[in-house]
Length: 408
Image (cartoon, rainbow, N blue to C red; front, side, top):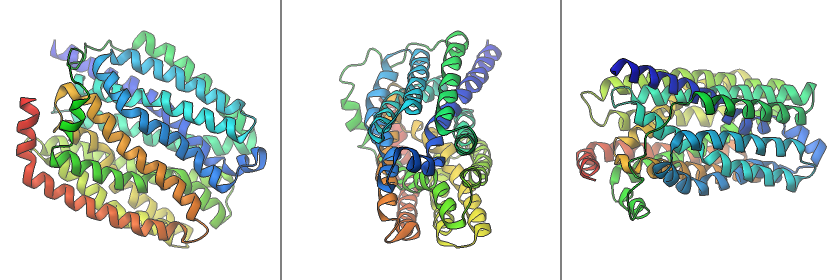
C-alpha cells in the first residue's frame, strides 16, 4: 500500500511538472518579444511593462479566491480546468490586433492561471509527507525554471523566424492537448480538509497572527520584487545594452540564471528535507538564507557593464534564489493548518504577485531615470532586511507557530 502511494506521488509530480512548465512558457515568452510588439502593435515601454503588471495584478488578486477554492473543491479538476482555460487565453494573445486586446487577454490569463498553483501545491502536500515535501515541491518548482528558459528562448526564436503570433498559437495548442492528457491520467484528489469548514475567510486573519507567516510573507515580497525584474526585463536589458538579437537575449537572460536556480532548487530541497528531521525550522532558515545571499548577485547583474560578468552574476543569483524557490511554500506549510493549505498558499502567492506587479511597472517607468541598477539597489536592501527578520522569527517563535498549527 505504501509503495502504491509512493508511486502515485511520484507520478503526480511528473504530470504536474509538465503542466507547470507549460504555465511558464505561456506567461514568459512575451518578455522575449518586446521589440516585436513595439514594431507590430506599437507598444510603448510603459505599455510593455503593463504586459507583466496587468497579468500579475489580476493573478495576484485572484489568488486568495483560488486558494480557498482549492480547499473546498477537487484539486485535480481545478488543475485541468486551469490548463485548458489559460491555453485559450494564450490563443487570444496570439490573435490580438491592438495593445488593449493584448492586455485584456493577459488579464484573462492571470485569472485562469491563478487556479493552478494553490490546487497543485495542495495536491502535492496531500501526496507527500514532511519527509519528502520539499523535494516534491522543489522538483515541481523546477518546472518553472525550465518553462522560463523554454519560454524565453522559444518566444524570441519564433519572433525572429516565424512570427510572434505563431509562437502563441502553437503554445496554446500544446496546452489544450495536454489538458486532455491530465483529464485521463491525473490521480484523483481526496476531498480537501477545508471542504466542510465554516468561517473560512476568517482563517486569513488567523494566518497573519503568527510572526513566522508575517515574516515569510515580507521576505517573499522582497524576493519576488527582484525575481520579477529578472523575469520581465533582463531579456530587453541585454538586447539594448549588448546589442543582441531577440533570440540571443532571450537565451542569455534565461538559460544561465534558470539552470543555476534549478541546481539550487534540487540541492536546497534535499538539504531542507534532511535537516527538518532534526531542526524543525530548517525550511524557514534555508528560505531566509536564499533571499539574503541572492540579493547582491541580483544587483550586480544589472549594475556591471560586462556581458560576461552579468552572466556570471545572474548565475550566482539563480543558484542562491533556488534555495528560496524550493522551500518558501514548503516552509509555509510547516506553519499552516492543513485545512488552510490552499488559502495560505494563495495569500502568500498574492503577496509575491503584488511585488511583481509593482516592480515590473516601476522598472519600465524608471529605466530612463535611475535605471535598473538604481532600483535594484533598494530592492536588494529589502531582501537583506526581510531575510534577517525571517531568520529571527523562525528562531524566536517557531515552536509557538507549530503548536498553533497542530491545534488548529
